[in-house]
Length: 264
Ligand code: FPP
Image (cartoon, rainbow, N blue to C red; front, side, top):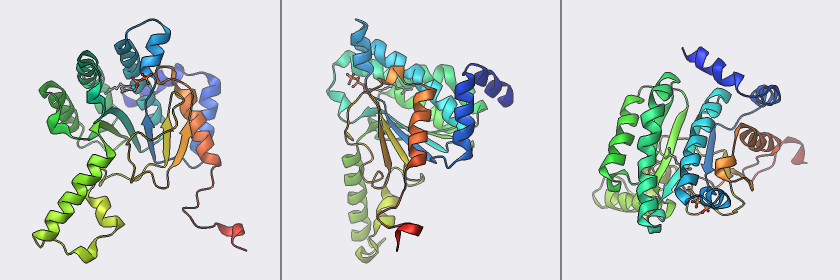
């Protein structure tokens, strides 16, 4: 069944893409790709459509890119779907965005299960509307034993919030004598973050021409390779993901040190 689905999907991509995909797979792939999916509103505006039409189109791209990332062999795909700041948007837009996880999982969950994808979520899940929470929790539960691609939604997520929550918990654990302050280290802070079970992103993509991080994974992105494109999220496709990966594969990641021949 899984093979049949993959074959069917592969038929839909062109030969050129198929070759680029094969080549990318022969080199070092990023384990963890994180994406700031931006530009839905502008995509809709260009077509004189309401902003929510852009978000709906954006959701379809999430399906496409999840499938392709899984086929490629990427281990974790983190998608910034709703930030803690997005509550400031008009009520109707927020309500629509809160319906998207249900809509997405309602039609796509069986395929995700079939493709061995594990759904994960980071963000403040408890303050989501009941219907959104239910859909997300159901997907997390039903895919919990899958060990393929981790599809990690950042939903009601803000990096500063995440760091503050972690620091508060560390402080309270010190106060209660569960840990002592002398063991506070990068690794310890990592273990209090919402990403504690995930590797750090190797590649961050932001669409739509904006070149900023917008409160997204500020701690985790310290050594991540960044890739920006003018393409609006609803126009993003497999070829764009390959562009980003091909660029990643030319980068020389040194983590502040030097490599081999550079040392002399
Ligand atoms: C930013 O574009 C995008 C968002 C705030 C929402 C992103 C959500 C999706 C792509 C769909 C999520 C799908 C699931 C399954 C949860 P913008 O509205 O800020 O665009 P603009 O900058 O052009 O106005």
